[in-house]
View 1 (cartoon, one colour):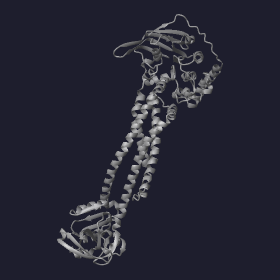
View 2: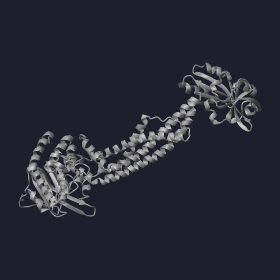
View 3: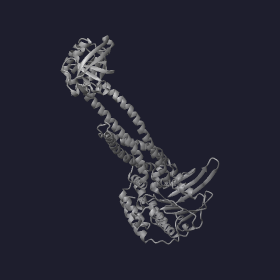
View 4: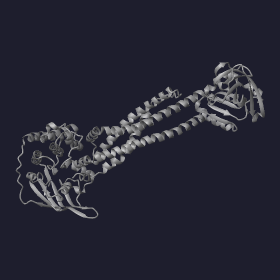
Length: 384
Length: 254
């Protein structure tokens, strides 16, 4: 194998590069647009995903939620769960639905001693301190001091019940907004009072469990699922999976958009390199006649393509990252709550550069193959 | 022998018709000879040059260059062989357009593995040899056709090849430059002992020959009369440049 000298390869590549700088600049531009799109979409997608995941952990205090359609989970179970070394807290509540003023409302019975756990964000009034008092969500359209009557329908309760409560406070959100986000028209009342009025006895239908060690959440989830076959068990991971599914679907759409841009870049590279190699036929013939090897000539073309790709990749990475930040600023400026943190990760640079190299290589492959296969005499005959 | 052609034939088969470009050519050339190939268009001059230059392969026969049967060499070895042993000068388009004169001349040397600085040093000395010491940094588009052809001669001598091949070297330049080019070819032939093959229609070019071969119908006929080498050339600048080249050659090990 002959030793590879690179000086003449660099000399040829640099010389041609200087001569066709405008053309190669446009090729690089096409590649960098595709790379910028890939980087920008990946940056925004990652940032949004990470933001949603973090927010989810922050606003939803329980790691696992046990829910039953009927109020049949004994409160004794809570004591058992609390004694488990892997469980930090377990809160039993009742969630049921009713009708107030023609509006479907969600009635939530919470233990007053642990009211802080539920992080009720009051707008006006106070928290309930005794039976018959309620805090309602803004959307219920009741004010502190109002007495409201709620009809509760539940097959499990065996017919219709009427609950009369006095509104003592109006809240903006419950459980740091996570449940409130679903606009359930919440009416929060003391748990023991609700149990008396619904004749449920010491039973609840929802248990919110927080694990001491997050690594044990999966095992806890599996155990609860196995133990309470009639109940539904949800974990944050379930919710994250849903979030991830949404993001994966979005990423698939983004990939199609990026793919189209990158395909355009590859076609542009192919067109430019095909035209360029055709224009350089005489030169290649001359070089081959001198004795410059096909390998070295092809390498000089490849060096130019790689220089274009690396420059385009670098520009694309920077443009993509700042483009994502710019789009975020525009959205925030428009009043859209898109306050996701746009942070640079080295993986974006790697993805951007790799994408640029692959696109340029794919585009230049056929023209470079043609150069490698040229026979000097065939070219020389063109002008003999 | 520098070049030995033994019963060399070249037949182009287009599928419909066969064209015999060379028909059993035999030719032996000693080192330092200057062979001028003359003959009408289509007589086989260029085909013969291309075969000697290893750019084409014969249909039959043997081509021995510096004792190597080049017809049998694989393409990659042939490229290297060409780089080391053969300088080729075309009618036109002899220079890479985006390289300066000195870069054009240095290119084959660098490809051969000579350090860039030394290659450029030799390139500048060769440019002095062809009378273009001041044009080292000029690009081809900044030079006249004659100057370009002189740079190409310097380039074709860059690797100190034992064989120099020239196809109609004066056909695209004016008379004054043609005389300079012929003078330089003669100098290379005499001072560097380079074996020269020139294909031409121009009887003036025959003045540099030590042998004249007439081509007709793909056959080669040696002229019975010895050529008269009556070319007058100014050796002064070339002789001093030649000394410099020899000194650099010792450094490079050429």
